Amino acid sequence: MDWKLGSFVPEQGGYYAGVVRGENGAPDHHLFVAPEDASADEVRWGKYGKSIEGARLVNDGAANTEALIAAGECPAAEACHAYRGNGFDDWYLPSQAELNVCYANAREHFDKAWHWSSTQFSANYAWLQHFSDGYQTTGLKGNYDRVRAVRRLTVGRSK
Image (cartoon, rainbow, N blue to C red; front, side, top):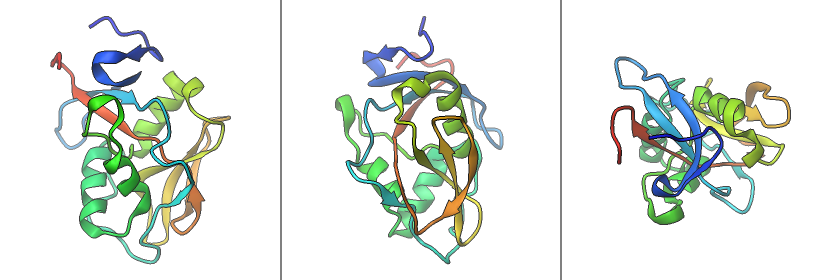
């Protein structure tokens, strides 16, 4: 694997953003960014006023997305989970740290706008990343913002 940061990797279906550390003993993973947004329109994070169990992980967007899908009515996670880019069906809404890796290594592939993460802050707020300056903050779950799906490959695996 000789992937250049920010380059498109056809066999992985997206732009290579780098390696993200595993969380809570999980293995590290390579992160790939979908070539376009998961939704043509901005969407709400969802579940305003409700805390979602299992959606507070900073490095594990896949686990957060699973928790959000199970909770239902989470448009940001649902759009990424439903995305089927380049023949892959394992896309998910990136976590707070995964979005930061995307900004650091592949920001040229994002519109300079706010993008939702899958990391919940509280019952009313979730983490966002802006792709003009890398600023991260929390936003009201009822607000409408962009979503970009990512997928992963465990470090040490080739497919």
